[in-house]
Length: 162
Image (tube, rainbow, N blue to C red; front, side, top):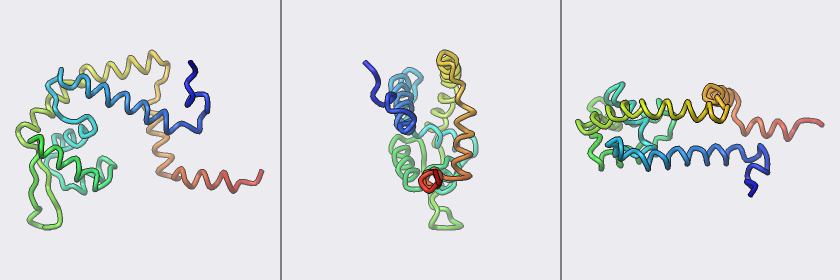
């Protein structure tokens, strides 16, 4: 059977990107336990950041990972419930919350790094199999969207004289 979304063309680019993202996250849900991982897949970047750069404010995490402040607050709450991070009020600015990995969080970060030995080649083989070396191209797309947001691009096309 034909894929309806594919049959509709490039208009559904966001849909297929989301669908691919969901497939990757679902795979992580399936295999993380085999690696001894309890970090939710969508929170891996936060754990990695804290492991590599040490304690960070919620705002700094949001800025560095280009995710929203409310989303990072949600992630921190979930990671704290798993015992992977601790939080404290910044003594220099009581409005800021500083997030640190616990010992369990550091152990999870090490396991995440070890898991890369399977994940990176799996990604590479997938892209080779699909003849779709898209990784760097996606970064160029993101850079172009930062330069000129997609909403502006849509309106420019709408206002373009035929």
